[in-house]
Length: 170
Image (cartoon, rainbow, N blue to C red; front, side):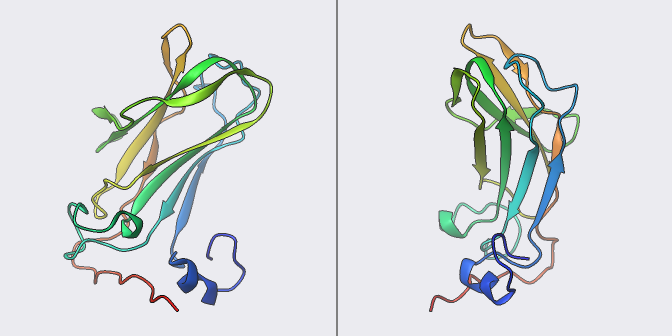
């Protein structure tokens, strides 16, 4: 079903295929106490599909940014304490190694009792590969701690699948 839509026909208009999926990870004791959180609402990995590289696999560098397949990591905090920000890491295997994707930390909200939602879109993927991600929190004193457990984003395509064409604009 298309996000935010009750009709399959709307999926063509928003260019999100019916096969889009979401992986949800509930709060875990692995989540550090650095932000003094009430339980985190959830860590979500939304799998967005828009278009693919000409051969269906490999680098999407030649595909316009708004048409690339991507993985989007979503996370929510119920409160934060001395939170400078977050870095997002990606690996080709669950055990890593992981590389930092964020060039600069995504800014946090310092100390607050308000709920905040964050997301990071990774459009530098090979659509035919599985990836694993985690989010690291950065305290205002510079200390870092793993914020989420490692979570998986399955491949969007498989070698030999016919490439998906962008939806026609009306």
